[in-house]
Length: 371
Ligand SMILES: [Fe+2]
Image (tube, rainbow, N blue to C red; front, side, top):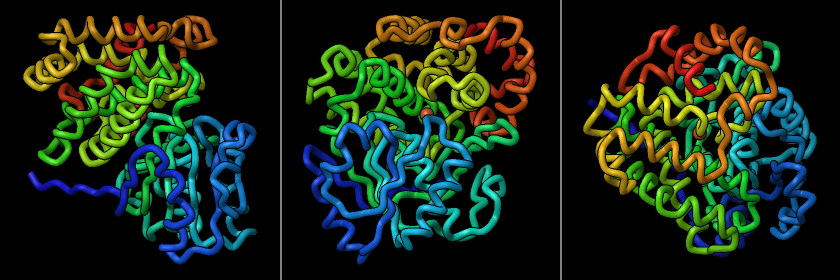
């Protein structure tokens, strides 16, 4: 099977890499940039520490929406910006990607939903993650909520790839424990799904395995010892590798099912993946038993059944709640959404890459077992 491997032109990696931002902008010949971030990083002084002159747009919410993109586009046009710098987590980087695309393409954002639907390349983007992480700095994917349809649109196209990624783990040293856990399990899910995906290939496999190994070795330490530089560096590396892997392989059923949870119940992306990961793994093992056995071995867990138990134990040790405790809703409300959630999960295309392709009814059952 033929495969394509798209990654940023440059990835600057290591402590202090963020200090290269000004030089990278000059190399691109950019004099006016729009800096996309969120209010928390702006208030914390993180943005000021870069010492860059740029128009700042910080109205990006977790799970960014089409409205965030529209506001960012207006800001970009007002500033006459030639490039975008994104400093933040996955939400900020995803929003920045689509702001850049919207600047070069007049269509409504819904026209870009799915695979390779974007006519023109977005503005040059430098992505600097502050969490480890979604890996968004290295991916050609973005997820934006369509507020009218209440759908998290998955947009995948090489035309949204950041030109440059600057991965400096020192930016993640101050991440709160809960966020560290959520995005860390997201990273693990990227590695696992990239490795078991029907689109896994020889370029993505080594990155996926490294992502899985690093996350299983260092995530708990990064959460328990926030200032542990070795653990933070390992997780930054894992996140970036996981991003490159899944962006060129695919995410599968966990991500397909987690987006509707996020869209309807507003759970953070990593948390909605985490609550699904053990049950979806158990369901999917029969479709790729050898691949899952590899994963179990690389996590030091042994066979596939031990892998599921290991994932449950990891969730418990990280303090990840069950779905029923994470959503602020009752069982009957949850039940009333399941049909649409299953349909939206299937419509995203991700479950079709899963080792076992589920029916809508099976997806409903999996949501129930995660409850
Ligand atoms: Fe993810």
